[in-house]
Length: 91
Picture 1 (cartoon, rainbow, N blue to C red):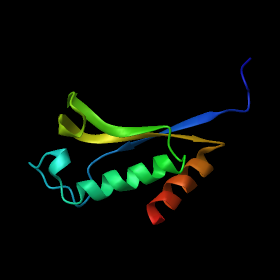
Picture 2 (cartoon, rainbow, N blue to C red):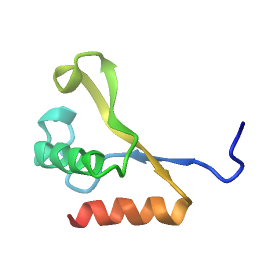
Picture 3 (cartoon, rainbow, N blue to C red):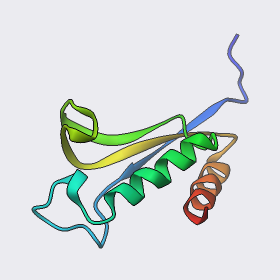
């Protein structure tokens, strides 16, 4: 049976921000491992369902990564998903 009240999933697309260095690979960007650590903490806290970079060629973080990625949040509503994302950034 379908639960008409949820669960709800929200997708956030990440794109290069102000610290992005053009011509530098995604996984070689400044503070890349800090970002990976932050995303792992969010997953460990149950704030995300799935998160990762866009891939041009498979190989995990050593593959060929495109500029950007996405995260799937499971939340009651958009407000909760955004709150979880912002709380994760402060942790």
